[in-house]
Amino acid sequence: MKIKNVVIGASIVTIITLSIFAIGSLLGNKSSDSDFSQKTTQSSEKNSESSGENESNTNTSKDDWKLILVNKKNVLDYEVSFNQVSMTEGKSIIVDERIEEALQSYVDGAKSAGYDIQYVSGYRSRADQQVVYNTSLQQNIANGLSKKQAEEATESLINPPGASEHMTGLAVDIAGSDALAAYPQLEGDMDKYESQQWLIKHAQDYGFILRYPKDPKSIEQTMIDYESWHFRYVGKDIAKYITEKGITLEEYLDKLLNKEQ
Ligand SMILES: [Zn+2]
Image (cartoon, rainbow, N blue to C red; front, side):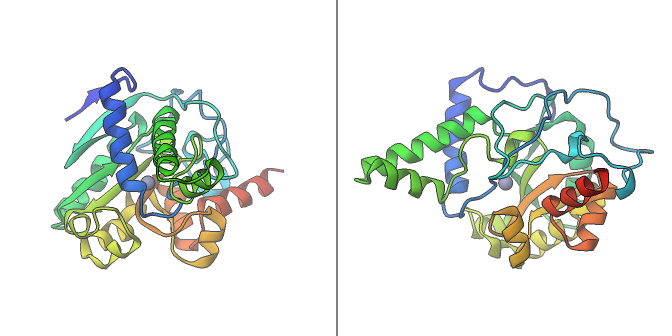
């Protein structure tokens, strides 16, 4: 089911629902999905994703919309704009329309392989993240923490507004239904399920990378603990390159930048 151009924020109910969900999925996961950014606003330029595009490592530019970087050192102070599309698999999420085809293929691939999977989270606006953040902060204060303590407690679990890659519309949390049933709060150990393993192993075939790998070097670079459910679209060639080299998006962009200079 696809609903084009959904306007987020039109409904307070939507925001509240998203917020409650986001809190649920973030709690229990250290600093999940944090990040920062670059410019991505003029995102609707034409950029055909599917075929013929040369995305080899040597021909990519840091300004490519697919390579926007959001992490704790690169916090976006604006809302990323792009054409939104709603997609449903277990639950409905919103993503950048430019990844719709790739994401659908990824999901179809998992189904063909015999796995029941579902979306957990897609696009979250900066404003959504602000609500999530504020709600947690208020809860911590209500629980008796000082403002400073409350901020620390909140930030150990929830990225500040502008620091979550989910605001790009290019990041998707996807889980095998069996893995999600066992780990409703999302935990790295979900990867012991074959369904999750399939998603991790085949992400690159569809242009996605496992964005927060579990090795110490990656964790240091991404500043995020292992997330076996968070996938980020970067395009097929770059996804293959990053996956085969065993590097992070941060490291890839560093190399690219050095080359461009
Ligand atoms: Zn995520």
